[in-house]
Length: 262
Image (cartoon, rainbow, N blue to C red; front, side, top):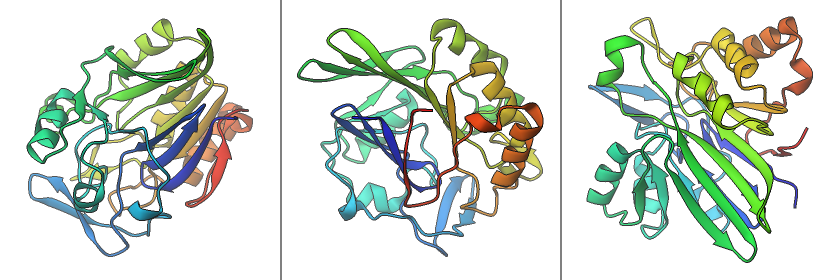
């Protein structure tokens, strides 16, 4: 089966990779509902998710980049199966377990978690990420990227990088050094700004990371669901065209399913 992604909205996707199905960053608030971003800050959602929790397929795990209200909201907290593995940061694991999600698994950077089915192994490795600049990052939740490898019969068949809400930072250079030959990347964009401070990649930073990672295919997500997202998707596409890699970008609409192969 060809690896594919269904875009639900924000950073929420359904990934079908081999015989495994994953949910990323579950945000199921509807248009007009507010997401809590911490430190007394809220943002009102501008879009509707393409799926509701009852409409999701059977899941093997949730991949959660960090614990912000636009990535794990009160709908997810109320509606997701509490026995489902949630692969996330150690910081987020502690709070999720207090909320009753006993299978939450906190992964320090470079630590891996494996799922097995028949002769297939799906290995998720926690990757570095940094949500805010400088000392401000300490006031924000810890964030991780994720590398998802599918192996069949001991041979790697597919490799996906999900960036999480990171900025372009020097530590990202270690990712292609450790994990070359990345087939596809889900990149969190949006250019989130609060009080004028950039907290997620804008078009220029996103293009820099594409050039750093060199995936065969890049699918942008997390770009227009909240007013704090200030860098439209078209800016990223224009930047990719200017730099000469627009043919390696595949945009996806909410509710659409696209293959993760070039």
